[in-house]
Structures are given as C-alpha cells and as structure tokens.
Image (cartoon, rainbow over all chains, first blue to last red):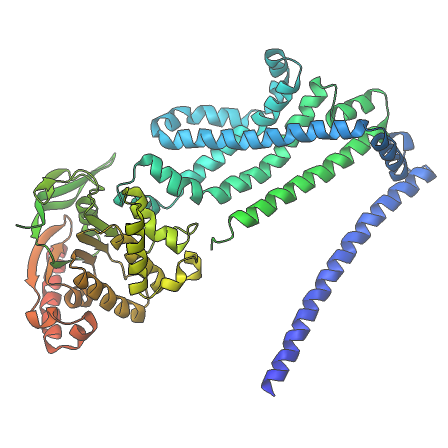
Length: 268
Length: 259
C-alpha cells in the first residue's frame, strides 16, 4: 500500500515539474510573438517611425529577397568565418600566453602591469592603427576579433592554471615527471572547464570585434551591411543584419555549451 | 645495509619576515622490509620530512641516501601516497593507475598487465573503465595505492593516507595496505597523528617533537603485535600498554612545548 502511495506522489511530482516547464515555454513564446506583433502593428499604425524601426514583414521580405539572389549568403559566411576564426584563435593564443606565464613565474611578474593596462584599455580603439598596420582587409578584421578576446583569456586561464591543486602536481612529480609533463597531464586538463568557459565569453567578444572591424574596413559581411544600411538610410537592412547576428551568436553559444557538456562530463 | 639513510637532515623555510626551522638534525635509517611510523603533533614537520625523502624537496642541511646514493630528485624506487587519493578526475581508473608507468617510461604491456593484476588483487577490477567520481572514498584510496604500487617501488611513503576516510573504511584499509605491503615485501614510512594507527601498522614508531621537528623518541613495537594484522593488533592486550607508553611521551612533548 505504501508503495502505491509513493508511486502516486512521485507521479504528481513529475507532473508538476512538467507543468511548470510548459508554463515557462508558453510565456516565453507569448513574449516572442507579442513583441513582433506589437512591432508590426505599431509600425503599420504609425505609432513608431516606420522609416527608422521598419517592421517584421518588411524585414522578412527583404530577407527572402536577399536570400534568393544569394548575396546574403556570402555576407553571412564571411562574417561567420571571421568570428569563428577570431574566437578560436583568441582563445588558443590566450591559452598559449597563459601557458608561457605559468612556465616562467619571472615573466609573469614582469608582464603583470602590462597585462592589467592592456586589459583595461578598450581594444576597439586600436582599430584605426590595425588598419594602417595590416591593411584594410580580412586580416585586420580577424586581428580585431583576436585582440578583443586574447588578453582577458590570458588572465582568466592563467588564474585557473595557478589555482590547480598543487597536490595533483605533486603526484606527477613523485613519479619523476618534469615540468612539461606536469603541464600536459595536470594543469591543462584540469583547466579545460575554465578554457571552455572563456570560449563562451569569447564568442560574444569576438562578434563585437568583427562587427566593429567590418564597420571600419569591410566591403562584405554583416557589419558592412549595417554600416551600408545606415549610410543609405535603409534601416530595414540594418535591423535584418542585427537579427541574423543575434540568431547566429546564440547558435554559436549553444554549440560551445554542447561542447562543454561533452568534455567535462566526468567531473564532479 | 640500510635501504634508506637520513644524515642530520634539517629544513628551514624562509619568508620576508622570518626564517622558520621545521626540521632539525633528523638522523635515521630504515632497513629493507621495515615498516616505520612517524608520529607527532600537527606542525611538527612530518609531511616536510616525507617530501624530503620523496626527493620533492631538497633539505637545507644534511643528506638523504637510498642504497648509499644521495637523493636529489624523486627516486624510481620510492613511491608516494598522499593524504587524499588525488586521482585525476578526467582520467579513467585504468589511465589513473598507469600514469606512473607512463611517466617512468615503463609503459610496456607487461607492466600495464601488472597494474591490472594489482587492481584485481585489491578487488576493483570492475572499475577499470570508470571515472574516479563514480567510486567511493575508500575505493578511490585503494586505486591510489595501486597507482603507487604499479611502478614497483621498493619503499612507500604514506602521508596520512587514511585521514580523509570514515573510521570503518579506515580500519579495513589499514588491514589491506598492511597485508599488501607485506605480501610484496615493501619497505614503508607512514606519517600520522593517530597513535593507534602507528602502533597497529608498524615495526617502529618514531616520535617527533615540534617547533622545530626533532626525533624525540623511538619505540620498537612488540613482536606480538607486529605479526598481527592492524585490526587484530588493536584487540591485543599489548596494544593498550604500548598506546599508554606513547601517550605519556606525547604528553611530555606538549609540556616541553608549553614551557
């Protein structure tokens, strides 16, 4: 008898969980639909300036048009490529730099104030210098994407390296392991979760770097479309690019999260 | 000929404001097959002493010899077991117990099979492809023992290896470690602050005084206790007598400290 009561209670509990989840999804969807609906109505009724704020249907029409003539595809691929390259290189180089600092405590002490200054400085302000140095091309956009994420990655990952429990290193050393083996067997794998989480931050930062880079130099890409739309006062184009960026940034973030869950499954 | 010899070893830590002497004039020798416990109040430099013997720390003065050779780095014939298991959470049990072989360049089929046999002996063969997080504390410490034994050390350094476990698991593990070490003919140095554990497991107990750590007294454990497993030894009438004796000496150390 006791068991049937427990089963009953358990089912009720599961049902309440399910119900809560359904409610959350419902409200989320409601907000999503109301937002676009309200946008559309206010634009048609003239409550907001349709020239400035456009409307969802206009954006959708433009999207279909751009998608069918293939020009959109190129812009998206271009920007996406730059961003992916930017955040992967930013994270890799940042981790490499952190490894260097871990390797040489002397170097880390020497570089400490410089890293603080570089981290505090707004990296996008370096844009004009980059363009002159590297040239108004693909290279300087990537450089911007890297620059914006590398210093913060270095600082975060280096701190993680330092916080690895020294006893794990002791285990390796007691087996006669050298510094390189300590790094490979302990420091790096122990910090994988930190590196992945800095990857998450860098997805967002890299988008900033690349879009700003495209504002400054590009003839292609979503950042270019925004700047172009602004110059010819086509805000439908601006908003469409913005929406595409929002969707792609979200997808990328989810991708990194998926990677995170796969890689750090076994850590308690 | 003693396997391990310490000659007036001393260790001083330096900081900006002070120089602290953790160990002073430690001279001792350990014969092959012997089980020695180092007992003392916390802060008497027990762990420091173990790190020095392990070759992880160079003593400020004095020398450590293994088979008449001076140690300056971790010796292949000395294995070290820490307070907690410190198994690598990102490696499977299989990879955890073979890490020593990999680092010691003994990563051969024969040695790997040897490690698996040890795992079987200790009753954890079924955990080979599991991760440490899936095992209980006692099981993990047993895996750590296999990891240490896998490289075939002649001497084991045990740094309070049971202190993080619950009492029941601790008693069981004492028996297991003691019988495993005896069976494989290993020499061992156990560092502990648990008087009972020291008596039950070892042949000789060395008492350290604190501030700085010095050898205060050396006890030979009666033959009657040595022959028994730790759990049985704890029940033996000689056990409480020895316990009493060591207890009094520890009181002495405390009094000296307070003066």
